[in-house]
Image: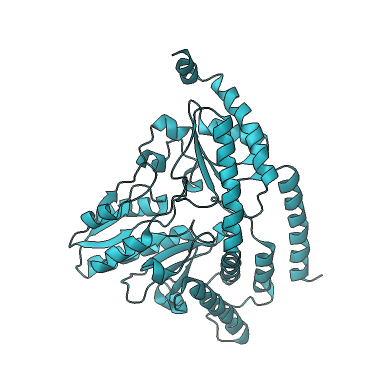
Length: 415
């Protein structure tokens, strides 16, 4: 049995187990953290692990075949983004894409004497927030735009914050915790009026929203494969032609000298395949998940007293339901959910090990107690109405059980 055939047999067995586990036991509602890799994506990747295993920088036929696969993937992604293939830079994921965009533009703009002022929002992903904090060590000044109670950044606030020495604006397309969708086309237009590069983290937007970079007025845009049923460890940064960018990884001429290192050929092929499938399924995915999302929100709010939706009900990702439960700890809710075979999260997977309240919810003006009592449910393409009904059936009892031992809840009832 050949290696590729063996891999397919193993994958088929694992996929069968996964289907059985997901249908009979697990209810996976943490798709914003990561998605299972689509079998069609795995199938597309398999030849590049063994049969076409050349280095894309090699000039022999196996290397040329690997390079052709990377070029085809770049062209496919460029088509979806309405961008030339040469403006797509492959990375190890969304975090690296954010780092390359922010550090790359900041250091290059500073080197050219353009200034050291950066604008972002108070509820960005930590891949953005930690990066701009790091830049403070090099003398950069950061302005954090406020967020409304429903989870939106104001274009007027952006316009007012721009200065002659502003060298970059970075505002996410859709928030990873509460799912609110920002008017980034308007942000981009404002930045373009002032000649300031505009970056958007679109990691959560792929598969649910339009990614046309021209319509969105972005100069840089980050994407990640594993949020759209592709493999982990691969992503991309769109870089508009003429955007100043200093490479952050040196050592080779790959990616037009914007990001050194041997390309992850199988991952890149899988990413392109996943993005193509996500774009083809986008309309049906939005219809399916938004209906189930509303069913979940309405069912929980109707059956659990003192529960509230975080963020806007209307302008949010179709699969995102972030709900606050007063007088309980989100971590305790997650533990009970997990014991009943339901996977959810308290916010960003990148900060799930922290006991601090969500910075996103604090930016909205939520109290620390409110933020700590919030749970994020994020649905997927295979989520069923039966699974949602099961969550609605079990959750009220869990909250009641936790509130029975909550001093703050007892005080609220007594008063």
